[in-house]
Structure formats: structure tokens, C-alpha cells
Length: 243
Image (cartoon, rainbow, N blue to C red; front, side, top):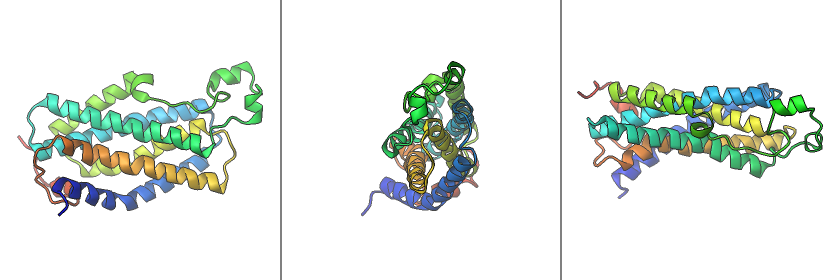
């Protein structure tokens, strides 16, 4: 028989695949609509969606751990929520997109950029344009935005443990943050093959890390999950917060 925790994880991955497909499509639409934005503008876009992703991820992870474990210690929930939200959001929005950009070759500077086609003012506004892909680690690069976002989400999850609505928003926001990271490092022309590759990168970047944040990481710290293997966040949505 499949162990109970593994059954929960597999059930969640299966349940979330269709919605992740939809989220990835919205990410592609966003990339096509805003493909002409400057790197500075996409950088700002990333640091709108990435902190929001961290907040929602922290709410969900902290809520699931609290509801499963009936934890009363805020320090334990703080540890679990921070690792689950900041750690997996970084993997989802930065690390996987970075490797995807490199593998797809979209981050290779154009000939004009590589030979200094930008003037000094443009290069100052777009510092990574002529130097290949850059990985943006939010909890370090913009620590004063990302880390407080994690603490806020953890506090909400601890005081008002709910999972359904934050989780749905989490998937979309995560997709858009990952898409913004790809847009920052994309310098090649957009073709059908690159769009297809970007779609695959977005799907992987959101599907496994977000389920890890919401399901796998909290369950690593839970002794005995009390829920049915599938759709456990829906099951608890109607329960009152533990006191």
C-alpha cells in the first residue's frame, strides 16, 4: 500500500495539474502581451508578484501545518512557514526559470547588445541585458520586501488557518512571478518553439514547487496527518480555526 503521506502528495499533484496548466497558459499570455517591456519594468513586475507569492505560500503552508498538527507554538509554524514559502518560492520563481532560460537559449544577448549597441544610459537601466542571464534571489536581493512578506503570511496562517482561497491565488501569482523572471532574461526573438519551451518551464516551475510548499514541506514536520489523502485543503476549509 502507498504510505498515507505519499498518497496525500500524489493526490495533490494530480488534483493541481489541470489548474497549473491553466495558470501556465495565463503566464504565456502575459509574456506575449508584455514582451516589449524593458528589463527594469519586468524587474519591478517580478517584485510585485514574487512577494505576493511568498505571502500566499506562507499562509497555505502555515495553515496546513497548523491544521494537521494542531500546533500551538508560533516558532514551529514560523520555521515551517518560512522554509516552505521562501525556499520553494525561490525555486519556483527564480531557480527553475533561470535554468529554463539558459537551456532554451532565450537569455543569450542579441548581437546588438553583445557588441554594446545600448548607450550608457540604457545599459544603466538594463544592467543584465548584455551579460547573459541573471538569477534574482528575492530574499537576498530585495530582502526588505520578501522576508516581511513571509512573516506576514505566516502570522495570518497561524491566526486564521485557511487554505482554499490562498492556494488558488498562489498558483496564479507564482506563474506570473516565474513568467516575469523569464521576461527579464529573454533577449531572443519569441518563436513557437520558445513559447512551447517557456510553457513547459512555467508548468514545472509552478507544479512541483508549489505543491511542495503547500503539501510536502508541511507534512515533513507533521507526525500523523488527520486528513483524507485527496483535497485535504478543501476538507478543512469549513472547519473552525483551532484554539
